[in-house]
Length: 141
Image (cartoon, rainbow, N blue to C red; front, top):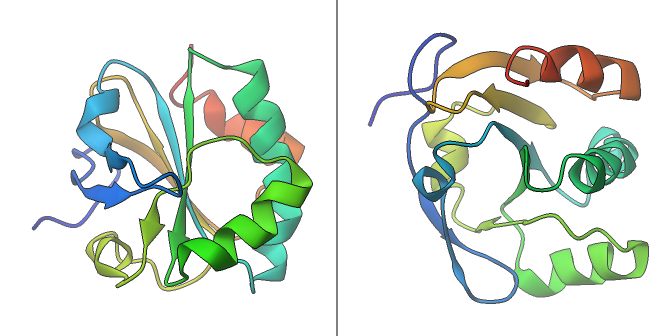
């Protein structure tokens, strides 16, 4: 499968979510997407989670915030997110197939995907409130 590149379609994938439901990226076509790859053991990932949650709440229904967990099981992820109240979808990339497909080498890595499924920006490293707002402008409104 094709790797993601700015100006090209984001590769589609299907993963299971914490609730056991299937998550498929292409089901979100028509909405801008912030696709974040993260893990519970990653300090910068943990630090940016509140910003992603705030954006998810503020942009609910307008921009999809998705947190793809890399290589951990549902219990590990649930134990981390539930006490902190994070509610945006977090599909589980247990075998890291999607992380490999997206060429994720460092965590966190975030892709900004427009309504048509085209990658408009790729951020390697932690997002802050300011960088998230700036990168969102590449896909929304």
